[in-house]
Image 1: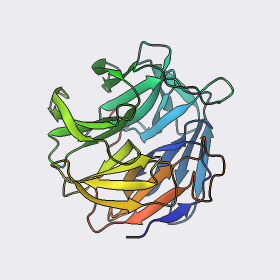
Image 2: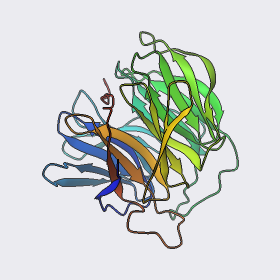
Image 3: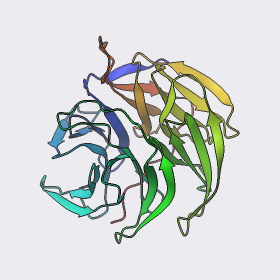
Image 4: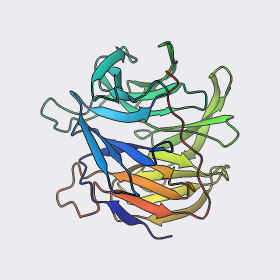
Amino acid sequence: MQPVVALAARNILGEGPHWDADTAALLWVDIVAREVHRWHPATGARQRWIMPESVSAAIPRCGGGLVVTLASGVAFLEQDGALRRWIGADPDTGNRANEARCDAAGRLWLGTMQNNIGPDREDLPVTRASGGLFRIGPDGSCTRWAADVGIANTLCWSPDGRLLYFADTLANRIDAFDFDAVTGALSNRRPFAEGGPGAPDGSAIDTEGCLWNARWGAGRLIRFRPDGSIDREVPLPAIQPTSCAFGNADLRTLYITSARVGLEQPGEADGAVLSLRTEVPGLPAHGFAG
């Protein structure tokens, strides 16, 4: 189980990996560079779209094209490259979108945080826990399910669909909610894993119900068992891994995004897309039903 550089992308702040099984491509974004990326590992073909503001995720939608989460709200990136703004989610204009993924019913879940990117793309400090967790339906309905979030990260579901995992990087904690797959309602929030090396960023779930979590600042992944205990730690060549997603036809390649923002002397792997072959396959990603 040896991680390698799959693509020397040199992202400033790579994030939001999503494996699109229909096109056999990996989607991800560079939040600071305002870029959406698509890469086909089998052929090496790549596409890039420039957004007018920071973008935190890009997810396929059933109507064609992608749904993208911009700093100011949710938009559609059409197949011809046109951007069509759709809705705002977080009413706090001082916040920006961060984590975003879809559940099995195609509802979009969006975590926000205080905006930490300045007008010249400079780093700004996070001084308040003003973010939230929102559920956005295909019809544009929006419901807030959590408030007072520092830095929203990790949105993934247990194999049986009965749990939603959600992290607050600022609080250095991953929580679990009971999840109603029919209504999309959350309840019974409680800690799943607290502390540990680095800080919890994005995650992916495998078929054994174990959560693979990228540890910002610690250069590693941690695989948590369903009871929250640590199964293993995997060192990475990038010090700031941001998130991960299972991909390829067998869903046994874990793709890991990373960042070089804030590093005085970034290495070759910092900002790259890494990959790791796993013994246990992951769960497939879901697109947006809108």
